[in-house]
Image 1: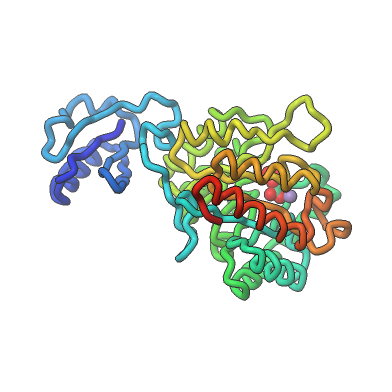
Image 2: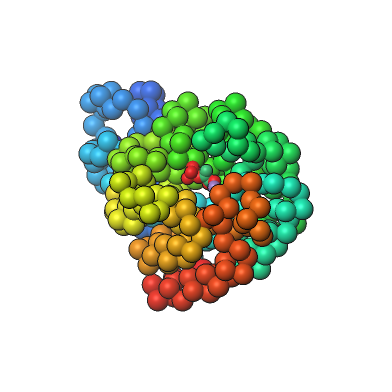
Length: 338
Ligand code: PEP
Ligand code: MN
């Protein structure tokens, strides 16, 4: 259920409504848009039958949300959500942001060097995994807290925000101390304990689409995070598993447009995991921008041959630079900036 408020609603009218609703055991979320303010109600709504919300001063309309993913849906918020990562980095507005860096943090020196290069090419956020979800337990599992330190130091030195994957609910607190964005990987999209945990912290979350998840399942996973109180969620299309074997995954470009219709949350495209091949990353990235994504996450490595993980899909810094220039042209054709 959402309560749409009149344009001249006063703060005391809003407090009055919140007081009444919260007394019935529901949680509330206020979203103050450019055109209007709305209150979203979170929790079992049957209790509302006892109060005629429509007649409260300041209320224009009360609407049910029909989609199963209520807080995430466009019905809940007609305006695009803008997620502030830190001063100067807002995802979901006119400007696109590019997240770049290696699949895994491998060393202090390695992440520092690549951070300088991606920053110079125009990235604003540095990626690097410290806890890696590898298919085989014998493959590199990440440097853990040491990797978080290297990532945070490199980000600080270059003025880049940072993102890293969290695999385990027990690590959420620790990882929050080091980075600006928590990534939930494709393999954990339906790890509901983890989703609830990141829903309780005040940190932006990059929620990757599960390997074989439908758009509805993906949005329901986002709903877990929002319904636990964290509205700073970005959805990441990273390719899905199909019958096709020529590429690692299939970039579902439709999903970018569909999710923009169904939800107010920003959409990020990951052309690296979507294709699995470095020479397909640029065309997939360009398609993502043309389809209307709000940002990209791209794997870049100084020496892909030696990468501890995902070398075949990592761009060398010089190719990343060329791609950034091409993306600027596409963004400007779309009336946007990078
Ligand atoms: C990654 O970003 O390195 C990663 C493991 O991504 P995904 O969860 O999309 O496979
Ligand atoms: Mn990777």
